Length: 193
Image (cartoon, rainbow, N blue to C red; front, side, top):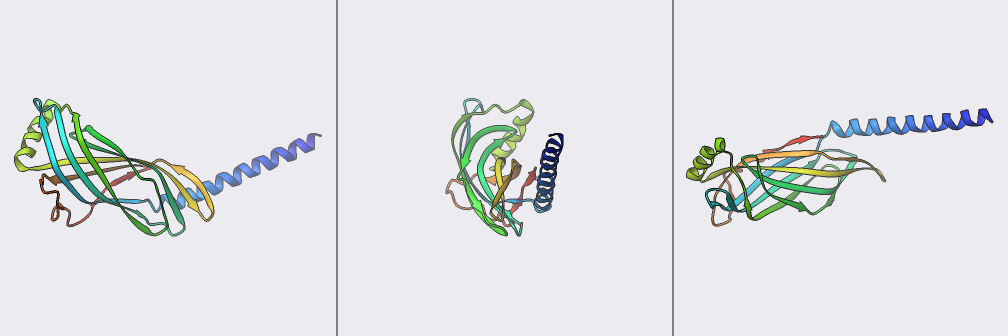
């Protein structure tokens, strides 16, 4: 009876070690080929502070690409939460449509932030706000929180939750046309696992 228990424990330990080793190898393969995020264009047709600079009315559209550089790993983007920020203050959060990305492909996505929100700009940032109003060009940050599953062959194995931060400047443009030449080159974003 004792030898049966030893055999059972040995099988469980061997399975756990081999599973852990497999996950480690797959993780190392994926981490060496991180996804790449780039902002490729943005339009800002409204960016108005009212009520003593406490109420923000906004209309921001961004286009961005996600590149899966892996040769054998597909990615399920189960959750894509995008948060638009100005001067470290969140002014809108949107959920984008989930999708599957095959290996070695680039996907173009669009986010739209539109509405009105109370935004409190710190006293140390008011001069920056006034300078940007005069120039008509605003510094915007968009942060993404992702929930991904990796597909290796027929197996959907690892769930990861990277965070992506994109910072860019966009001119106020009432016509809603592209902000080219501001975005002649894509603006790379920081991806953190």
